[in-house]
Amino acid sequence: MALPAERPAPPTVDVTLRRLVEELHPNPACVISLWWDLLVVNDSYATMIGDLQQRPERERNTLWIAFTEKRARDLYVDWNAETQQLAGQLRVQLAQHPADPRGHDLVEALNTASLRFAELWEEQSVARFHGSRKRFHHPTLGDITLDYVKLAADDDTHLIAFLPADASSRRALNSLP
Figure 1 (tube, rainbow, N blue to C red):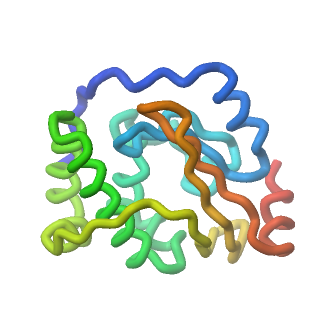
Figure 2 (cartoon, rainbow, N blue to C red):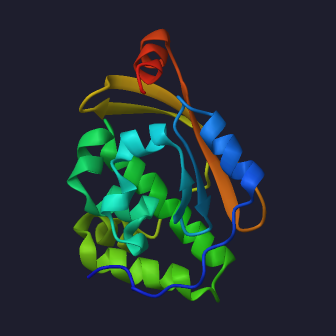
Figure 3 (tube, helix red, strand yellow):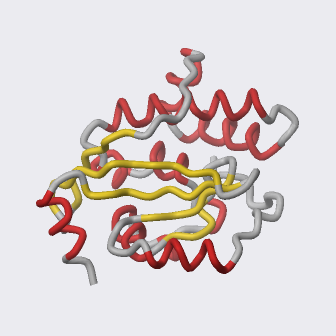
């Protein structure tokens, strides 16, 4: 099962925030909706997760990518912990926005498409977001470690930025065109 083809219009992202995302290059950065829909990404972020233009718009979603794509399983060094955290955060978000159909549609689609998600969802664990250090094994950049931060841009969107945690990760990111 795929995500529903129709979804409510995504939140708008103002031009200054779009510019900020681009200016953060070579650090991966993006703007996401309440439901992890990718609204704006910079080239570095696209390099990390793969070309978004190759995906249908409804699948340009961080949760969908993390739970359904082999590339994500290979990219995150600790994919199990990453997906556990994401499922717990989704449960908190759903509790905060129970009337929003996008959240329920996302849960239904992920339950059908991902055995890992279905198992985690059944556990009913919750998790609040917290900044963290993430390790990646990228097919061209190699092993990199990035610190991850999420900032509220407004009520409906968040800016996500990844910063190099060490000199070798900085060199890897600086090698991006």
